[in-house]
Amino acid sequence: MPDPSLSQALKEAFASAPSDTVILDTLEIWHPSFTEPIRVVRDHADLIARLEAGAPRDGGRAVTFTALAFDFSPPPVDTAPVPEITLSLDNVGQELADALEAAAISQDVIEVTWRPYLSTDLEGPHMDPPITLTLTEVEADTLRVTGRARMLDIGNKAFPSITYTARRFPGLAR
Image (cartoon, rainbow, N blue to C red; front, side, top):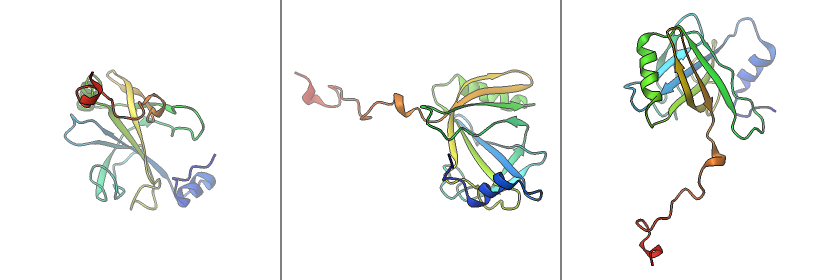
């Protein structure tokens, strides 16, 4: 099933794999306890690229993605109830491992945003909007951080999102 959020240039790069164009997968990891997002690129060199204008942090600005080996495959475009992937970051420093471990034990969610760039065009990601996943089940050791990431679990959300209680709606109390 085609993904309508991918740019035409990225679709062509996926289909034809030109030798002069490299698809650069980037991840932005965010938690409210972080002072700034953790941004990494799957490449051998750091990357300076522009974020999309609607990004929640640093929208429209050129930011640096740190080169880091990680294993990631985009979530499938299918009819699964909650698409889920496994994410592994190799050779992480102690600072990154400590930040992720502290975030994993808090009550707030860890967000992971995937933005694909083309090496020939760094003026914005080639997916609009980028995919944002929730990171769960984070484990860290001296060499690797692994976790499972899933899209918003819309099937387990309350609808309507308002909880009707006697405190908020006194007319309910008899």
